[in-house]
Length: 361
Figure 1 (tube, helix red, strand yellow):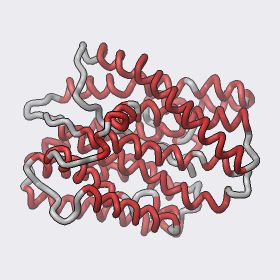
Figure 2 (figure 1 turned 90 degrees about the horizontal axis):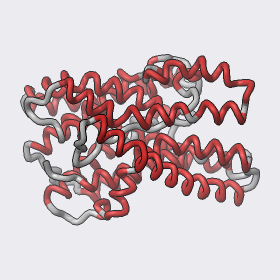
Figure 3 (figure 1 turned 180 degrees about the vertical axis):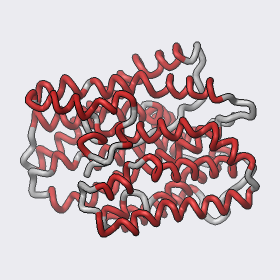
């Protein structure tokens, strides 16, 4: 199996987009809050990158004859230890910061311990406690279906996969456009567009199809890695001036898909890629832990500093980034890596799969 280190490096940059969107909490009480919000909020679309990447990586590492049981064991080993720690850490933090809300928090977090909270069309549940974990709830659904999905995808002809990719694109784009009049930040329509695991499944399946295409020698002819990144930048710029129902998924999922395909192609062809830099690859390996802990760090810093000026908010954001990187190192080094190895029976994959993101709305 060829290593695709550029995808690992890109994982960290996608996680950094998510982090940036959550630092808006620091600027809410500053003069820049209103003007900065449109520039940072599209970072929430980073979840789409992770969902597509997850489907791609699981397919890339899949081999004929792989059985569902060992696959589920590997996914459990990869996700569960760090996930449960990241969920549990929010309970004492809330007990200290807002003790009067602890009882309500525990009630709303109850589905979170089983990874079911994304199925509840109520933000009190899907964003309870460590709100970023809603995407892990989606990923668990994807993992449950993957053994069935990969069998069906492998059986399809390449032409049928192209048609399927077109249908998936329609399934991604149409619901936000149809539900657009109902979205106001707290409605069931928002959940249906951004959180509902079935609606997010289409991006995961797109990643499966891209990986099969690359495995069978498919190559992007007109858009290389620089071109796909330019498309991401252009789509992000458009998202800055777009309503939320478009920036969540619609505008960026195709540029993200092209970037994943182009980065994999660059690694397979031995082309130059800055994303293979050892520092970026190491940060990419920490990205799951970074994602799981960054909101906890942001909330803790915001509680302690409560910035009211732009300078204070910038300082809080920098401090949070340093704290999130430190917490990611600790979680990855002392929990994620050793427990994954133990639960897998002493073996580890060449490159771990990507996971999700949290939206802040």
